[in-house]
Image (cartoon, rainbow, N blue to C red; front, side):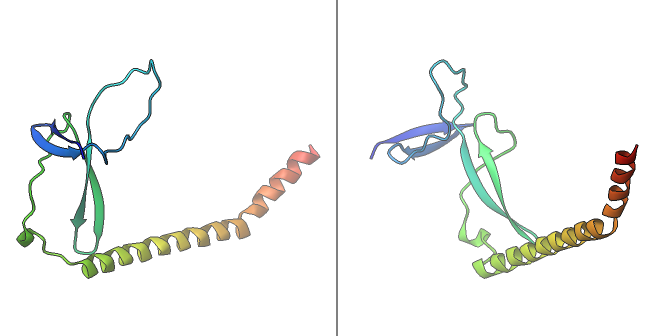
Length: 124
């Protein structure tokens, strides 16, 4: 297990090189910039929602700090997060159902207009 220290924006990370993954593949001759980037997933918890957000942390990152999290900072539990995510899924499913109803209404009531227009065009 080969470990290497990588410093990104002043923060040092110990990376296990045996499990590090290549994110992109390039061909010989491709022009590239070398920017090690770490993807950090975090929860944004509101009154009615819990959303997973991502921060892409590298030497160009501005106004981003990564700090250890204490147990006392974690004021949520798994079941509360799942309930909030399920509520958000249900709301989005209702939005999809509403869009489907609108599409069906359009097909039932507006396509007659387009059929009439096609008949006029073919008779000219």
